[in-house]
Image 1 (cartoon, rainbow, N blue to C red):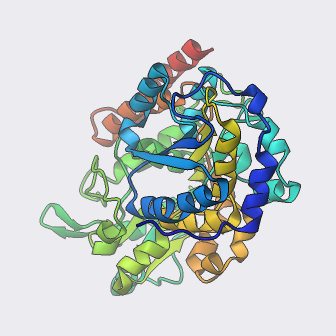
Image 2: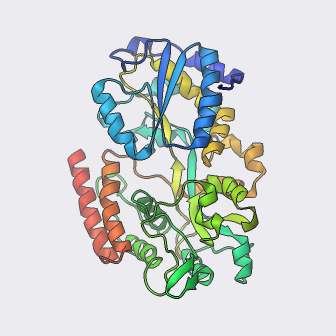
Image 3: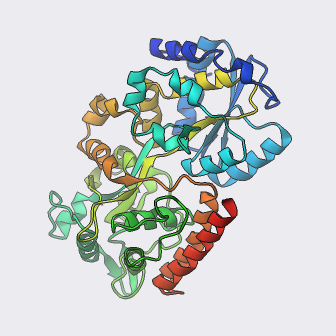
Length: 434
């Protein structure tokens, strides 16, 4: 049986503010919405997220609004194909949850609604409170996605392993060069094999681009130029960043034995928790879950490192969010649901379930954040994060460049050559999208 809870007063007020705003604009239809129901798709398969949404958030919304909400969770790998099929069949959901990278393509294909009219009706104080997150959902200056979470890639490290190696856990590395030196000290080997990685960095097909972005931005590089018309990865900064990334896996001083591995999503199975790694590049908001899963590991977060002479940088910023199907028959109800999801209290619960960071600046004063020095450090680090370019064709560019990055990590091609080829493929996508 699903539990219900009272909808906070502010949620109800927000819902009323949005109610009927675009009724006259609705039409077409998802094939599901009839004014008494709402369909919502969330990406992923987090059990904690599903429990919170299914057992608390949705019942509260249904009680307040008097409508039925049908929620579907779609694995990230299947989300794009299933969404395309649903659009083709006229059964796409009213509320679409997706990653930031997909926004521009959905806008270009007329799949999602311009939310300007709704955002303009929001409480100005609420807009200001989300001034670091809301712009992440904009395409060409117009809001199409409302981010639900913020994220930052940071290194979680074991204070226990640091002390055992004679390192001071109170003075973690500040540059990537220092991270590399410490990782070598922390790496343990059984003959030629690594028995404990000094540093684990995601290198799965999507993670490889995000990890490279962390190295690239912290070395002063960029994926695209300022007006997003040309690829810029094949610069000296980019080559140095990829050489560093590849060096983690190659040669006698390799420090990471997880190349190409999809790292476990459950905190208890994370290498830095199990002791298979002394340091791991993680989503910073997950630190509390990691600490709870490995209480004897003395896990901490270090601030994002930089390459010598550059500013710290890391993949992050606004992450997953919600959009409204342009063909939804119930766009006002869809906005009401989104409004509920971004209420500070609800959003804080939501990001806790996913191990992410809240979208409101004021959340830094919440008990959840202020009770954890590491979460406070994660919120502070958001100022150093960079999002992927929100341009049409980005997911195609990401996948294209990922293949070349992986070849460099495996030592099959020189990093400079890999970036030259990646640059060429990305520019072909840019040209086809213009």
